[in-house]
Image (tube, rainbow, N blue to C red; front, side):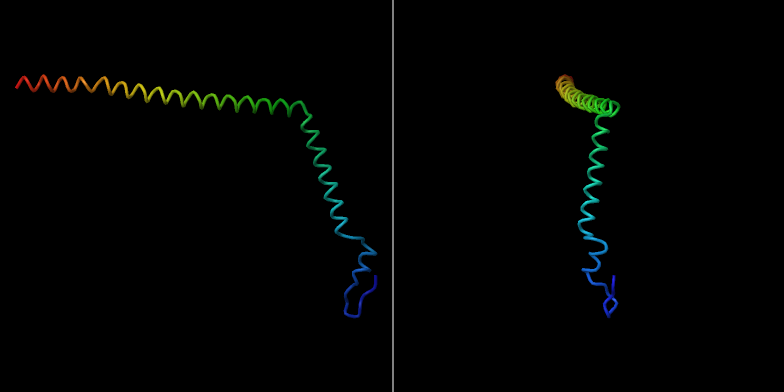
Length: 103
């Protein structure tokens, strides 16, 4: 490669020696993505990986069911609390009436 009088190298000379850097970079990225895809495919075909995915799916389903049960139980507790309040309210009123007539 030869230099210009100002010390720089012409782009044509650089490309002649090293080639198009953009194309080399694109090729490198394509190779890396291909290797990554192959690696991912090999992992996904691994029986251990498949069994762990199945365990995760089962645990997520179990968690969802537990959350639904908890929500149902909270609803039942609220209903029972309201029922208890309704049952206790008339007793208080009856006692007050009885006490009123007593005086």
